[in-house]
Structures are given as structure tokens and as C-alpha cells.
Image (cartoon, rainbow, N blue to C red; front, side):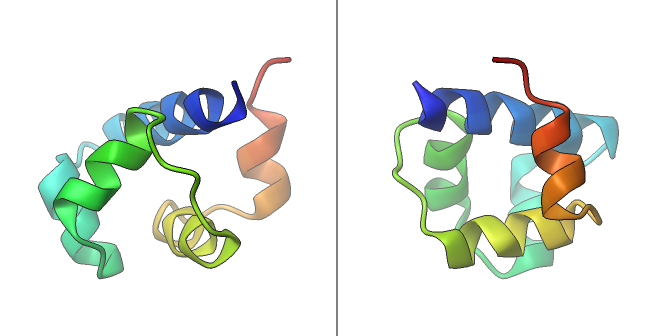
Length: 70
């Protein structure tokens, strides 16, 4: 399921930056519980919120998606 794949990718990248869910959510101006549900693959995230997350990870959309497996 694409939601789960995106959540796993976000979590991997966030951890690689050494940030907790709480610190990352604060950095991007997103509620921590909402962000946690995105990472868990339980949310059908909007493009706008995905853009916030990708920007917070300091990546381009293409870099974010190129690291995902089929």
C-alpha cells in the first residue's frame, strides 16, 4: 500500500536526521499525532502536507521518491 511505503520512507529519513517525531513535527509545523499516523501509514496524506514533510527533510520530491522501492 502506497501510504505505508511513504510512511516507512519518511520514518527512515527522519531517523537519519536524528530527529524524534515530536521535534520533526514541530520543525514543520504539524501536529505530532497526525505526523505519527502518517509515518504509520494510516493517513491518506494530502500533497500539501507531503510537501511540508519533504521540505522538512530538505529533499526534492524526486529525491524522496527515488529512494522508495517498488
